[in-house]
Length: 97
Image (tube, rainbow, N blue to C red; front, side):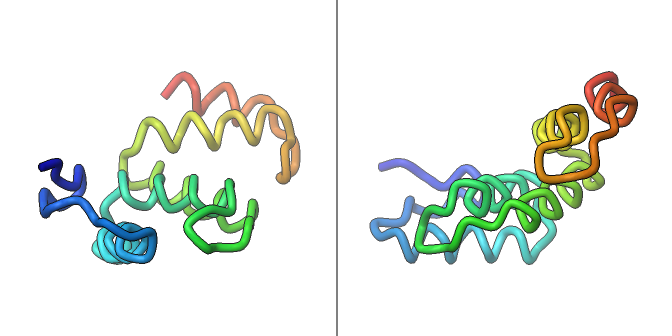
């Protein structure tokens, strides 16, 4: 069967198990998991309420830990001022990093 891309354990069968796995990896400061958790909050899936400010915080944290995917997401939000103060220069810097 498939294994979890974060911890290589067998894939979860239930939504709650999936969220628990992501939360555990995020708590261990895994930038991929933190970015994914930001995606979950941004979309409001897996039983979590949609929370775009929390998503931005998580993407920023993941970017600080080296996630280029999260840095791109932060750049998009900053450039367009989507839920954050618009800062086109910061958005471009994120994309150039």
